[in-house]
Length: 489
Image 1 (cartoon, rainbow, N blue to C red):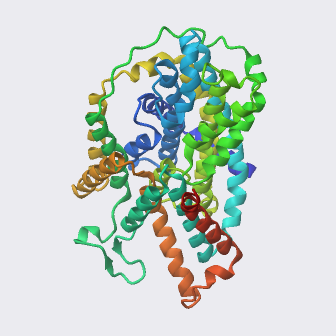
Image 2: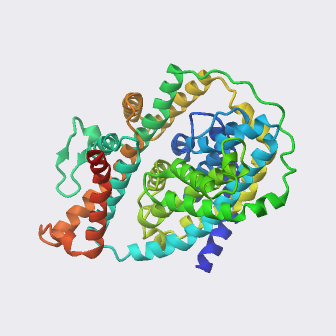
Image 3: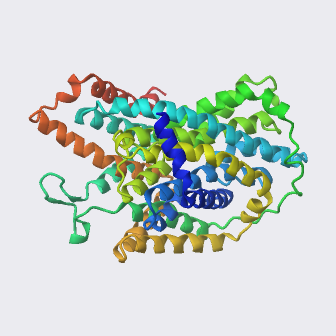
């Protein structure tokens, strides 16, 4: 493992990786600071612009955007009570009250430093768990891979929304989209209306439509009211170290909660921050302070939502299964670069995962300093008129779609899925399960067919293998638990 870590470190001997890391950090902060955008949209928008890049700088750029966007979401949550990302909602509960008390600098310092601790602790856990998990996955056969795909889909359907049925419907729609194109074994066209669909529906235009174009339509329909900036931020560099020493166990516990939550497909940083915040309040000596300006509340939320980033990367790198909507987008980015995520990644392309590990460590001081010294700048970014943001997002989405194949077919796909995403969001249907199902659908179908071919069509193969039986049983329990709870109620 040490040799591979040195391989990741040596990658930073090239200037292009440093440029990618710095650029990703700046872009990520801007995206995180603008309410309504977020890491998924940011990564999706930038994918088309990585086509001409080498794989390492491209992946470093996108991962840096992912991490920095989670960092940046807390800044506007504290300054103007408008979370830049959904995962920073819990941060605003205590961050904005501290701002009103004249402690905006302290609140920003806690959010940024706690985010750094969350990434550092979780990145070590990522390295310690992803490699053994990938070694275990190398022993998996088609039956086990089919079962783990179903398990991931069941988690997505059950955890993606307050209404699990809507999550299941979105997941089913994603699977339908995944099956469009030529049958991988027989070559028979499926759900194709023209030769343009023979290769299936391209992933990147779907991403751009569901996340970017739909968000632009929402922005145009409901422009946010301008909110005044708070007073000048002071004392951001004057927080005593003793405060962090007193919260050391809270930060460690929140990092563990965030990482564990991030590993679960469909859970994500938002759920991680809420769980960590609730546990911090439960175990605090001053629970009444939560919601009224508690430093512990900010530290718990920010540590957890940033630790969830590393957690969501674990199933992506080790199993080829996305842990969140953003990592589903990253899978598309890896595939575009000719890299297949999963257990063979550590053997065939060890420079990819280990450079990601090193990037998380190298990026911590860079992003912390950017956050501390540039907080006023990121706050001003949030005051850009929403109509300008919407037009920019829509323009970049359509340009990026055209760039995927230098034709208008992906642009049409982007527009169609942009309208679909807009209608789904208006009806309170989650869009993330579509992407997760689109990515997992191919893995599930291919391994189902391989298992049946290997065992001459015997469906009981999935029941006589312990791992596949266990995963399928868990999938049924997770998928039907919300229904059973509703019937019982």
